[in-house]
Image 1 (cartoon, rainbow over the protein chains, first blue to last red):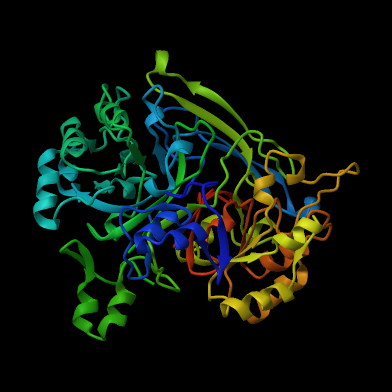
Image 2: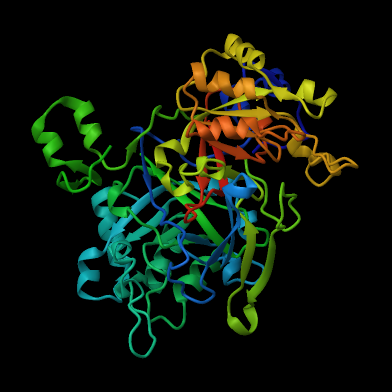
Length: 272
Length: 272
């Protein structure tokens, strides 16, 4: 971690280097500790590919709770010389983050998450087969164990994303699965899986390709309460989780740093 | 470029690989061409550091043109059980992208930019010394040539960012530099520098730590018109450009894919 004000930095050959860091010696680790910015838990590895995990932000994107997003044109090429829109929406619309402060009073808002928490290894837990049979399917502890038997331990600081196949249902009633009684039906994380992730693993975030971290019919929101209560964040309404490897990709969770944001729209891009 | 529907992919050891790619042979390049997602112009290199180039999105962030952003609380911990806000703002508020369609009728909107255009090498052209003497200072062709003499050719697909020292003025009248006549005073790109970047170089984007790609008093918006007219994008109101090396970092320009967005808020993170 760079501590601004405690060292003097100079620009030399394009790199900011610390005079004190160089003078004090202590080798590469000491120098790295003095570099500006935050250290990532893992250096991303690249084959030079990028995959967009973000839905288009549209006015007809279904929301868990109102309001529905709206937009209006506020400038036009003629006569203004340029085109621009104004947007109005709730923070939890389209592909977005849930920060700890969404459910936890006193929990961190999006502006309080460190940038290093937003550039993370992403792993994909594929429950599409059981979700095809049961719209209320959940990621269970057993799904996590099966994943680890196949792919190794979930990396520290990872975003653990559920692939249920739901992103492709967007634009159809099956995306929310709302029944005659107004109850949603879509997959999510079980409370037990969240407990497992909190207990034995050091994941930073969970993600889903559905409207909520909890499955549709949940009334207790146990996954939300437990996960955000552990000071970790969630990402909802992701797409293209079947277009990245189950492990080995890096996700950049580009949440806008909304003032006092309990969450909010994020551009999520995976590189691998 | 992956062409969905033209190949069959299987999941094996966590990586999506193409059967046709493997069977057809043609080596690593052929396989890479068949991988999901888009190829990046350059594989990012990492020392495992991340720097946030994004200002907090606040209701008092100065805008070039109204409206000023507003927010209101729409759910509270008690009695709703969770906290959430609603936002209303113009697309060109805080750290944000200008897409070609902002000034160019028929130009691309943010949703039409390819993900590979959003993960790019970032280079920093430091004009802070002259900007301290002249608030209307501009990046000139000479500044670009001087940069290239020191650091080598601007990489293909780069985001060329102006560091003028203006980000640290946020919260003071000097950030907009508005004078008694209502004219802004802050640095920007000259039309000639933009011509240079379009002509001889293959940069994808330009960025500034001020309110506009053009300097404050501009009335012709030549940098906007030329650059967006060349089907390239801009990023305005960046910060921390003095916290990354002049060359060698990668910027992820996490613009939300706003429907028909002429631009819009973006989380910009640099890794190096």
